[in-house]
Length: 108
Length: 116
Image 1 (cartoon, rainbow over the protein chains, first blue to last red):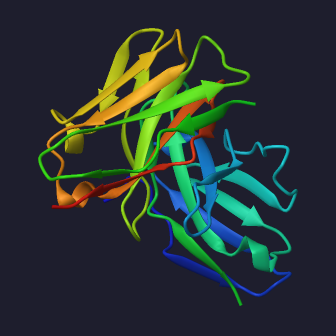
Image 2: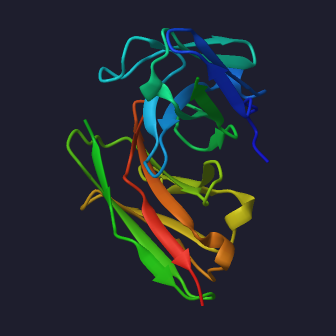
């Protein structure tokens, strides 16, 4: 089982907005992270420290938080965004980690 | 930007051990943590354990207590994950991740196959 809860799947049409939620009691006290993972590849960090975006990640990816829920928002979804998305949480020391079960984003 | 390179794929017999390395380069800092994460075929990500090298503190999940050892060598910027008494359900891709200033950097993954 996973300590963070994500929906198993989310489907959107190209150009629409996708929102993927992640819930867990630890989230108000710890940083949250989001990873994109395509089949056969390593996870790629898309959001760190709740709302920060690595410079190489497109601006359409954003993160937000409210209490025990964090949200990954992809504005103007593109076909290339189809992938699994994993949320993760960790305290400031970096250890330990907890993960969500992952959400498969399908671009219709 | 920190770059992590892991050792190559392994095929192991049940009951044996595997040791995977993870070498960091570029932009490394003195204060960091290392975590190991695995992903079984078709499954999600599972945190196995981690180490805070500065304090020599390790933290393992209950699932791996007694079988898992994580170490770090500051002189070579290399971390290691050793898993003993391998079982078929340990077949997975194993990832290392180094966290500096609350930013994680991941290795490319190491496929470990356990088969008789």
